[in-house]
Length: 119
Length: 163
Image 1 (spheres, chains in turn red, green):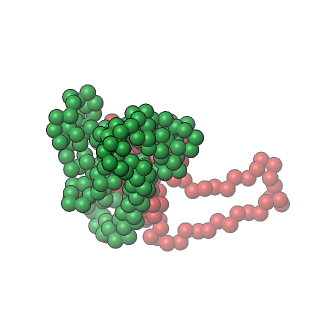
Image 2 (tube, chains in turn red, cyan):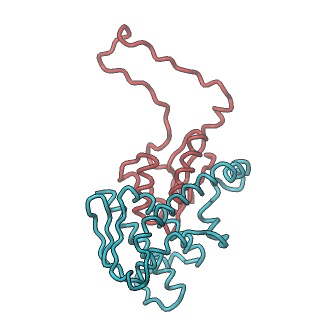
Image 3 (cartoon, rainbow over the protein chains, first blue to last red):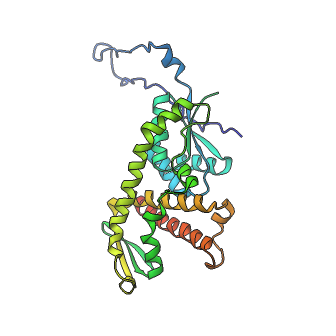
């Protein structure tokens, strides 16, 4: 069974937000760097998946999700329960490099985690 | 046994020799040496078999880092456990004080130990969730008790970290 990501864990580019009263004369236009490499574009669809493990405590897994991804407790718990009931949960999607770093951190907490290409 | 938070320490008091010995065994229990199933569980692949290059690089660059991290945790726990050193008589009703700044190391070492013991014994999910199992009658029962006892400590430490 393939689990779909819960709402809003897909990485989105940070868009600078201007204050409501800002005018073009007070704030300079942000410099937007173009992503040039075709490799970069191809690199986008990766996901961090955590798999079920009968040994790790549910409270421990929740704490790890909060720490690694900065998720609030309820969201971390939803993912933990998805892992528990469905066998896996997609915790994050985005570029390959941060995905690898997330998996490294999760392995540091001894969770069963992998990165996968989004199919 | 009593366990409580006292200022910047987690205090486990009235430890009988049996539980004190189980605590002393945490670093040794976390050791994967000679147990390929445990080694495989502690150092899992970061991707499925299709990503061979990634898995190979992981072995070279990431695994040694993880090994160091896990070793540091068990060493910290081992140093804290020196409070329990002594002869059998002096172990009676001992108290162990864990500085809260060592809580993460304890969580990690306890988790390593639980995973290694479970992998070595190939415990089923049913066994692991059977908290009403009969008293210890075999080496396997003792190992399961150890996994549950370490889990209880983890739960307590987690609760203290949250509060």
